[in-house]
Image 1 (cartoon, one colour):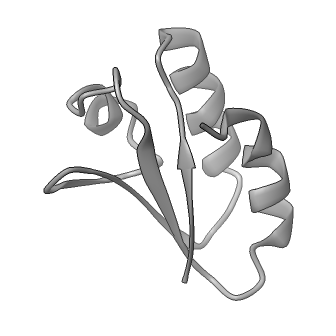
Image 2 (cartoon, rainbow, N blue to C red; image 1 turned 135 degrees about the vertical axis):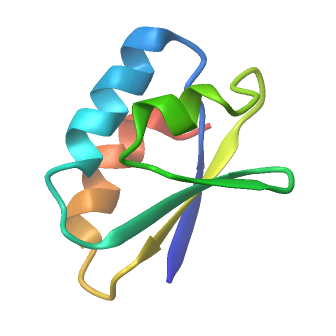
Length: 75
């Protein structure tokens, strides 16, 4: 598992983030405090407090391409 902190403060950034994560077959979760949602679910993401950075957890050892694409969201 690998994790990074990202910022998704605007709806457009959430949409772009979901479009990226949906292209990968691995399990990707978003954590905010005690809440955990599927990173491929736009409704799940909007249920989180996006005013603060959230943690992305990727459960795949070959996720370098995904992490490279998510760099632009890093907090």
